[in-house]
Length: 450
Image (tube, rainbow, N blue to C red):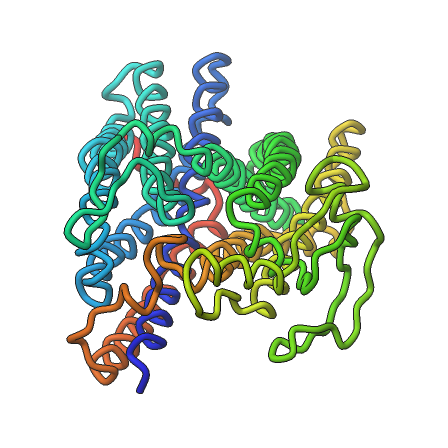
């Protein structure tokens, strides 16, 4: 049994599962704060019920995110001890700040929010949720600062076979952070928006009580979703252009671009032969990839074969090509899900302009199932980000096979992988049960106001 492959599978399982909860936490915390702020401004009790209802779902999601996130910390000591030894001096700093500052900030004030109904003034109570939202997104920022070092290492030197930090502020100014964090932030907004839209659509379809709450939730979710979808796409475009500069192999793999082209065509559909590094069949739009890379229909985009030769010259003989098929299709699933979300948001904006959300049952059903779209985009986007960086754990510095724990056997990793998968499967069942139970119950049983 290959311990490296199993360790990668285990980390993928735990990371993808954890990342199911993170975007909704980021986006829904802000949305609940907005709803409660509207209640404070207007005095309309319906907005208070809205804040409580969506707040309960936020709490369930937050709890699951915490449980799964803790496991992530142990991964670095269990299966990736060489990674921790090599880069711990750098990687540990932002993670420690995230735990001591951001996580305790959001968890403390979330407790204030839960138990502060009718104990705090409305303004102070709403402020506590804004602090939760700030803390949640600050937490994501610090984690992405750590992750961005893996994508674009800065502010370090190699001493005694380890990477040591020499400039903490270089980590904060890392250009990768400031294309990655906004993309994740607005992905969280998209996730929360479609979550609210889908559940509101269900209650409108079923003609549930408290119709005003569901209509207003749908309206707020639509506006929120429009902001999220448009900005996540624009920032994603900037992020891709940045990747062309710092990780050109990642973007070449995303397009299955084997040979450099000028102008470069963008692939709509490609079936390739990874072993021979050539296309079997390809449907492409001429010049479009150059436009996406340089905002003009000309300009060279380097191909996989040319980049492989460059990396061999700079890093020595080895295979520097990531899994192309996985990179290509996860990138397209992410973009495709985003395009479908954009179409749905345009449809809902038209309905909002007409002030009419009385759709046919099939439309409500589509909006309910559309909750899955941002989750699909988030998951495939994260898989693409990590897979297409291979064979590097830290790009250009530490290869993945050098980061795994040398003393952990394949059998031990397999056992922990099976156990984690079973436990996480049970947690997923519990999470879906609780979310479904409270989502279907509506506002009738809200009672945490004492």
